[in-house]
Amino acid sequence: MKYGSRRFRTLIAGAALVAVAALAPAPSATADRPGGGHGHGTYDVLVFSKTAGFRHGSIPDGIAAIERLGAENGFTVTATEDAAVFNDTDLAAYEAVLWLSTTGDVLDAGQQAAFERYIQGGGGYVGVHAASDTEYDWPWYGGLVGAYFAGHPAQQTATVKVHAHNTAATAELPRRWTRWDEWYSFRDRPADSIRVLADLDERSYDPAPYAMGNPHPIAWCHRYDGGRAFYTGMGHTSESYTEPEFLSHVLGGIQMVAGAARFRCEADR
Image 1 (cartoon, rainbow, N blue to C red):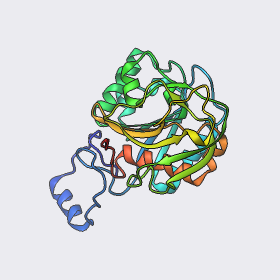
Image 2 (image 1 turned 30 degrees about the vertical axis):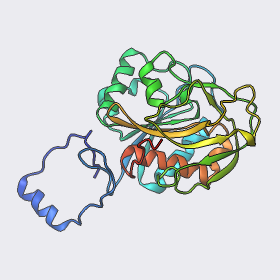
Image 3 (image 1 turned 135 degrees about the vertical axis):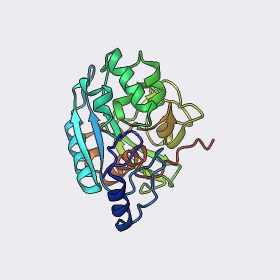
């Protein structure tokens, strides 16, 4: 059975409900999703990868990896590039919507309004890599993702400084996480209300001509307009989607925004 305040369920006859409740074990206390959460059972994630600008060759690898994560961790995955799914009825079927390296203007005005209502109703958003290179003319989305993409140097090895280890998205990461990727810089740093989970150590790579200085945030999460949001700037390469640590990072983000893990994303600065 799926739980969550976004779902409307037909009530079972009172006597039958009481009988079932008496026999069933008490659900585990995990989620802080209003009206319930995913103490057990499955939940549903929509992976959206439409592009109207640069298209990342790693998108199919990302979809396949998230499908594997779902199979291994108790959630279903629906992948699409059809923006028509952004309507009230279809979005209500999902606890989280993951924007996987989307680029450019991918939703029309009606679809944007439907996604705003979804988040306002308690929905979850995960943005991966180029999700921040998307919808520059939609300020609400800019607030949701947390920062817009500005540019990147050549792909190279860099060190990520992981600040928080008490979230599902960071629990399995080392304090200093060295890996190869395409390292994004952003137009502005996330707002003070956003909890930054990890920064880039600009001394560990050559950020020119896109240096942000210290700090250089690369992953964060926050509550936004009634919903939950997680973003990671990593995930450009196909190889990212075979890295256990990166996959644990994405999985944790999904779990947090879907209500399957604690959402410890209050700003601590």
